[in-house]
Every structure is written in C-alpha cells, then in structure tokens.
Image (cartoon, rainbow, N blue to C red; front, side):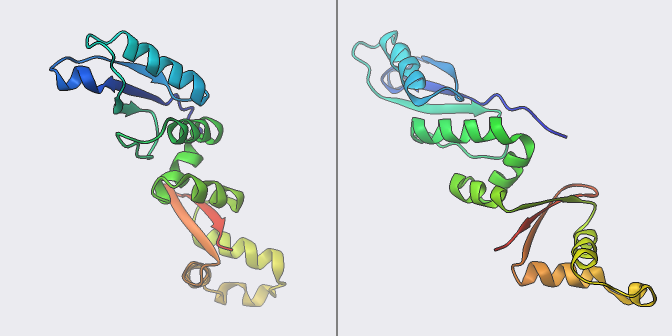
Length: 172
C-alpha cells in the first residue's frame, strides 16, 4: 500500500501570538524553500502587529511519523516533505524508524532489500539464492534462527509494517 503525502505546516506570527492574537497560515511544505519563505513573509506582512519578523511552526500535518519542531529550519521541513512525497509510506516508515533523521533515512532506503511475509522468509530466500541445500535437509534448517542471527549481527534491519508485511534493509 502506497500513501501519497501532502505535508504542510502552520506557521504563526510570534509578535501577534505574544500579544494575544492568533495569526498564521497553512503552507504546503513540498515547495522549494524560497516559495515557503515568501509565504511566511506574506503572512508576517499581514500581521496585526506592525513590523512582525519572527515566526514559529505551531502545527503540521501529513508528515507520516516524522517529527517537526517549532523552530526547525524551512530547508529541513521542505527536505522532509519532499522525501515523503517521493517515497510515500515506505519513506515515512523508515523516517520514523531512524527518529526523523533524514540522512539516515535516505541511506537506509538505498539499502532496501524488499518486502516479505516474515524475516524468516527473507532468510530462506537468501539461503536458497546463495546456497544449494539438498532436499532431504530442507526441513532441518531453522530460518527463524538464521533471520534472528542476521539481525543481531547487523546484516539486516527488519521493520514490520503490518501483519505479514516486513520490510528488509541490508545492514551494511
């Protein structure tokens, strides 16, 4: 299942906020940074407080599991939004797994090995592609133990998205 993300941020004028006014706007975060900054500046120009200059991100939506902080840079927010737009639900899953670190998420996606029903199924596929196991020994192999060893040794990283849907990434 692929999800299309439409990340956006609510940017508030801090001068208005500190004077008891709610003034801000929702902005599409998938734009380039200059377009986002232009919209922020337009919102600040329309503030009920003259000469408003400071803003903060007071809300955000459709960023998957990524965390957006109040004072994250416009560039960081845009990069995360574009990453989610490009990679969909898998990107969101990876980004959540690496605690919103975009660089680690991009690196992890580059090592994507595929989807399977379980880590044991993945281990069985790797064994069958790299080794010739005689039929009479097939039932003696503990693929769950092999999968567990692969994860413990850092050879693979498995993320279960839902029942019988495991995404596997090479560890090195």
